[in-house]
Length: 268
Image (cartoon, rainbow, N blue to C red; front, side):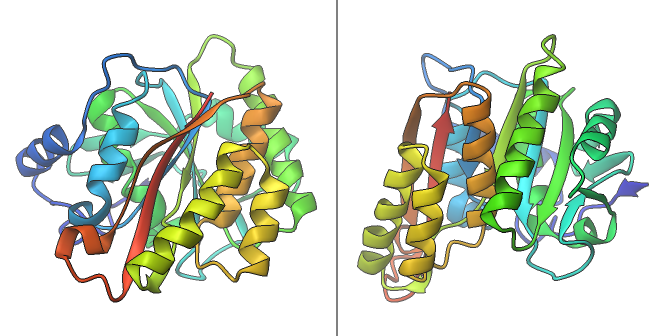
């Protein structure tokens, strides 16, 4: 099954040449690129969050394989859904699924369900793919779409992903948490709350991060994917994390009354 784009022409251009031009402007390349284990990148329309995503992707060495973990906004499909089709299509072309890695994950992580439906209309994973294609046209992906998970399930999934990556030492594989931060609050409130959450991400503490989200009722849509990525990266030996960029939609449209926050973090 080839998954057709759901939000091309809406979140980003559906014209290949225009999209390449947009990505060339959005991706800000660091002088020294890091070989990372994971990252957090936003998934709004490129006019809003593309600058943060582009700066984050510009800070890393282009991977060979990306496990992209996004929240399930649509409510469709399985709660812990790994895409077991053939490819994702974007205006830049076809991106193949790493079938070997998918099969290994399905067989080794019991809570994962092979499922197409959860991915059909979900934008959180799709919007990451053109950035990866631009960096590496031969990129392979493993899309995982998540509903709510308990801490126990987060730990199981994080460890399982890490163990599957360890079985492929010949490949440079990264894990991406697709998430925006605060939703529809004043810019100042968003920034204050998001920086508290980002502090726990930088401390690589998924438990404290989850506790903060719950206690302060933070509207971080991809907080479960973020927690999974923190856990998986630690299982892979990560000890460092860095905030690459942060901004809100208010910084773009200059309306600060009700914004969405966007943060980019790398972990290695």
